[in-house]
Length: 259
Image 1: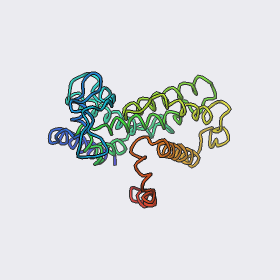
Image 2: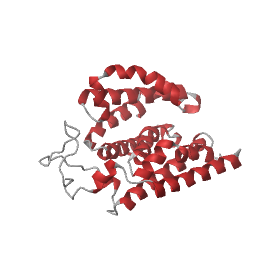
Image 3: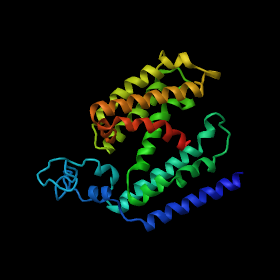
């Protein structure tokens, strides 16, 4: 079993290399790499009401460019960030069995999920931000649930979990060109859930660890609240469905299709 897992992991790594060597930079990547220090593109805004037009007078700053290429290396830097994010994701998924069994072996089966995922392969080849976003989203959602932090009643453990999770949320918002201070609302929810006298104490399961059903229910609630906030405030791509809310009826079908 482990030998087959290593083979799939190696195959995933090979596919990542193929994606890097065979893919051209995507449209969004090309746009972000063309902005100046103030975040302005030479031709102005390319995202206007008329998708076939541009606005040279636009003052919209593409501030997320600095997060995709923090070293200023151009396309190589963007690919480097994507590969590092994939490696960290694979390492993190492979370590999940150790959450309940500290002596468990690192799982190449779980790690290969990231490397074989078509969306991740496409994104890392095109230089898109999905690998970084997935890494930040994983830290945001899983840091408060790590056994070494969630099992402790000490305020220091809760504070560390909140700092890690909120920091990841803030960077994720900045990566999407949104206000990172919105992550403060996430910090309040985490303290309400994971604090020494928070709601999590009511859902404690075996040996002080919160049961998987309760954890899944709370994660689903947090995601639903985030989607609702994006829909109401008009933030991100989710806001586009306000003109066609009926498309949400396909969500259950999409979820079962993925499962």
